[in-house]
Image (cartoon, rainbow, N blue to C red; front, side, top):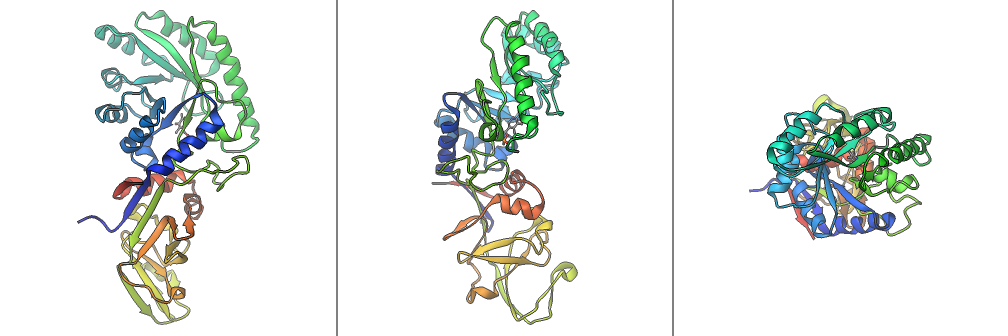
Length: 374
Ligand SMILES: *Cc1c(COP(=O)(O)O)cnc(C)c1O
C-alpha cells in the first residue's frame, strides 16, 4: 500500500521549461543542476529526461551524487560543484566526473591519482568573484592555473563563478561580479593554450543580468518551473512562461463538524468562531509541510482555496472546509500545484514559511512518494 501523500513530477513541464530557458540562451551550453535529488524532483528521473533532450551537462554538489547518475547510465559531463576534495577525489576519477577545484589543496592528490590511472584529468576552477562563499579569489587564480597546468596529468578546462544577487533585477553586485569574472578570465585565457569553458550564470543570472551566458549556464530552479525571485511570470519573461513541475497532494481522511468556540489541535492556537467543518489531512512536518505553516497556509479542495487552521503536527493538518458545503473523506486536497482552475505556487508556500521556493520543493519532493506523470 502506498502513502496517501503523493508528489507528481510533470515530464512535459520540465521539457517545456527547458525550451523556455534555451530561448533565452542562444546556443550556449546548459548545465542542469540536479543536486539535492533534483531540488526534490528526482535526480535520476530528471537527468534521464533532460539528457534525452540533449542537455549538455549536469551539476551535483557531491561526488556520491555523480556516482549515482553514472550508475543510472547518464554519460554526459557531470560537475561536482561543492565537494571536489579529499577523500572524494578517487570517486570523481573512477566515475569520470569533472572536479571543480576551489583551492590548491586537492591538486597534488588529484595529479597523483590521475598519474596512477594513466589518465589526463580536466578540471574546472571555482572563483569567488563576489559571492563571498566558496572558491579562490581572482588575485590567486593565475598561480593556481599555472600550478595545475604545470602538472602533466591535469589541465584547466573551465572557470566558473556564482552570483550572490542574481535574483535581484538591476543589482549593482551583479554588474560587478560580471565585470570581475570577465576581466579575470580574460587574463587567464592568455595562460591557457586551449579554449577554456567559462560559466557564470544561474537562473537569476540568465533572466535578470545581461550578457552573462559565456560558454555555459548553470540552471536549477527555472528548469523546475520557478523564477528565482519568486515572481510568478516576470515581465522580462515574455509568454509563454515557466510551468511548475511539482504537484503535491493528499487525501482527506476524516470530515468533522465542530461547534463554535472549540480549540483545535496542539496549543489550541485556533478556536472556531462558528460551527465548522474540518477536513483532516494525513500530512505534516514529517512530510515537509512545516510547522510554521500553522494558521497560514491554504490548500485546494474541489478547486477552491481553504485555510489551514491550528497547528500543523507531525502527520496531521486541519483545514477549515466549512465554505465548501459538501466534502467527503477520500476527496483530494492539493498542497502544491493545481486543481481545476486554481493553483498554489511554491513561491506562495515559501512566503508563508518565510523562505524561498527552493526549500519547500526540496522538502516535499525528498520526503514523500514521488512519481513521474505526463
Ligand atoms: C545550485 C547552483 C546553481 C543553480 O542555481 P538556480 O538559482 O537554481 O538556477 C548554479 N550554480 C551553482 C554553483 C549552484 O550551486
